[in-house]
Image 1 (cartoon, rainbow, N blue to C red):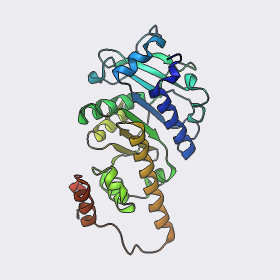
Image 2: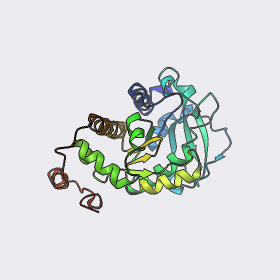
Image 3: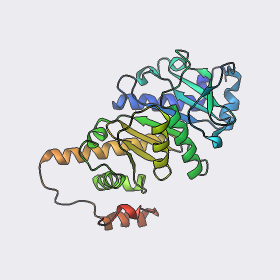
Image 4: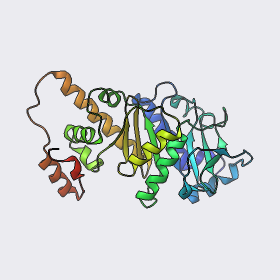
Length: 276
């Protein structure tokens, strides 16, 4: 490999970021993404690392991620610029052995600082690694307009958002049978929202941030992006139905949702089915 940008992990990261930008999910410097590299990917890229930076405290503690490396977007950087200038807008951050500090070992040439949501990413990675037995690798945060709009008008709960998405489009219960989490509005970018979001990520691979956007976790870029896309599409359907002003005459019932679960061998979250 004559250039680190030839690494498949970086190429996939850049392609996913470009897809999100083209979807309109990343105004200005909005949104961020991180990818937990495999040991083999790290070893393949190590010749390009500069490990001279000092360790910067994270403000959170993720001991199960100690020593691991993450491809991550930079603070204040624009998704629209990642494809044209990757080294300036993304980088590789390495955690210290304790999992409570990081240093940039490649990229982010414009400031050497990862996204301000990096503590949230690390806590989400930590939780998803634990609940998926190490399979989860991608954390993606975006600002889909219609999802944000729904946070103004739907009841503020994981149950209400999950049911709305499941009933909007058949595929949703297949993609996230556990439902989606929900975090009421909080100041972003710090340890507090990182801990609250991570608590939701113990149960859900997707978490809605009120008046802000979504966090999605997955095993690879396709699965993670696909979940974000499905939620965004379901939100569009819900708003179109609301905007029609017509009464809903038919929908996907709870028994229908259970039938989908049985057909696909999925465990649909029963806590979100039936009357409360």
